[in-house]
Amino acid sequence: MSERVGAPEQTNFSLAIAPGSPNRRLVSPRPGPAPQPRFFATAAKGTESLLESELMELGLPEPRAARGGVYFGRRPADAYRACLWSRIALRVHEQLASFPCRDGDDLYAGVSGVDWSRYLDGERTLAIRATGRNEHLTHTHFIALRTKDAIVDQLRARRGSRPNVDRDDPDLLLFVRVHGDRATLSLDYSGASLHARGFRAEEGAAPLRETLAAALVRFSGWDGCSPLVDPMCGSGMLLIEAGLWAARRAPGLSRPRFGFERWSSFDDDARRTVADLRGEARACARPAPPLLGSDTDVRALEQCRANAARAGLAVTLEQRALGEATPPGGGGGLVTNPPYGERLARSEHLPRDLDALLERFAGQQRALIVPRGFPSRLRASRSLAVYNGPIECELRRHDALGQRSRAIESRSEKPRSEKPRSEKPRSEKPRSEGPRSEGPNPAGPPAARRLSFRSKKEPGSPQRG
Image 1 (tube, helix red, strand yellow):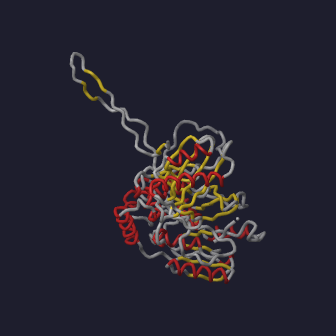
Image 2: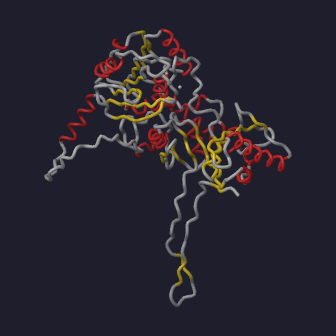
Image 3: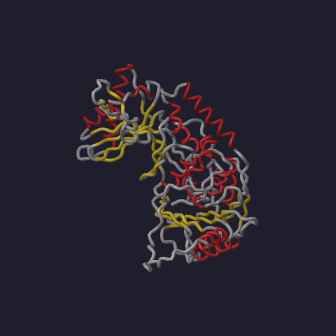
């Protein structure tokens, strides 16, 4: 039998008998193990902490970063909200079952223990993606095939019809993972990957994925209200993701429907819930601040303009060299993704030119994504190790000069301890990217803005945008 995962645990009560009395009385409860969050939002490697703080600001309960994503939530509406609003998540899964699995027979029995009529009938389609292996299950194709057999056999026996397989656009997408002597079944709520916003028809030589662009914007500390500059804008992913975030535009509004809307269990109550969430999201929208881009490639500027128009954003674009980029008046931010990797050649002077750019924009919040070990004579205020496709990269953030000065002054005003300090050298280990917020929350539903006090208000193949 399959084991349901994420169901609330029962609270354990103890009974006591008063001396000399036949009556039993209930005494204080002993709570059982804390129930685990029901859903898991997947993320690009290294961006889990940014996704955790994003889900926290969206008002979703119990976000907890883990390897490869963030656990959160208990109600279907939590998963619906994450699909609609998250800019960093790639997919949203619900773990349906986890069971002992040594071979194909165990796998078939475990999958058969789930009631698939809740999600599928003879008119719907499914696809299965399998990962992992053990001593007896050595091929993912066989794992997927055995899982499919268990599902269609159950539905044929119960309903007299079976769903068909559609690998490209299924009504239900199921992930199966075999690890050691256990198998896990996870239901995908998203449908197509959440990085696909629907506005990108034009791509540059190495387009930056939307979710990683959103992670860099969040990490940058830009306030979402002042002008934002990308002096190497390419096809515009950073400018567009920043503009949508600042304009409080839910990325999921551009989708006609999500995966969960195609299941048998998606009833009238669920439709009303999703309709309310979409209406709430539309009411949040506001104008975006100035978005300023430049590039030396005329073709890239045309792509950026076309993509921004499809996203409903106005951008100001100029053809100019990196050395000619200057900061706008009145503060603001800078984000950029310089060329690197096998698909885009890099000038030998790029490190020097980037340092000069960061110095010219010293009054702005600045952030960039570069390969690990990319040379620079400027020390970043913060950095975060991530992956851009297969390439090990870093998000580097340089705080505005005024902000950094105020932080130094604030520390210098604190009274000093009379105890002598240790002269041990400070560790150079990278700072932990914990669950704190990476920035203000201009872009979120009312629930997110109400709950944003829970986190700190600190402004928060290879690909190129």
